[in-house]
Image (cartoon, rainbow, N blue to C red; front, side):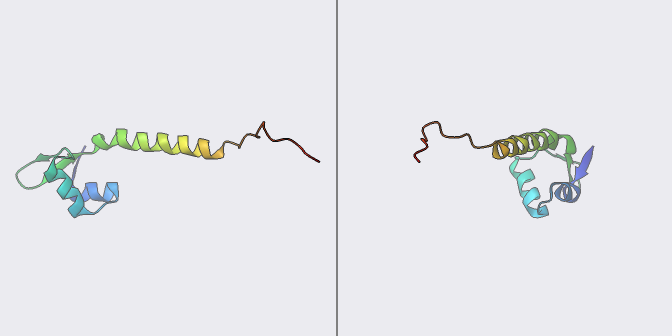
Amino acid sequence: MYLSVQETAEYLSMDETKLSALVLQGRIRAIHDGEQYLINKAQFTSHFEQVEKYRLMIEDYLNEPIPEDIDVKDED
């Protein structure tokens, strides 16, 4: 599914001019139909999957309990 620059900017929640600059720099793949650039929505799928994977990894790490220090001695 191809989206226009405006639709892609809304989908990615970013500024339209920044997205246009990335397209012109070649950092985002797009095709030009003579009037406008069209961007394939599927190229962002793997990025969003990786972001979600790393978010879950960080969440698991932060929820892991802190182990007790074995060097601590109870000195009453």
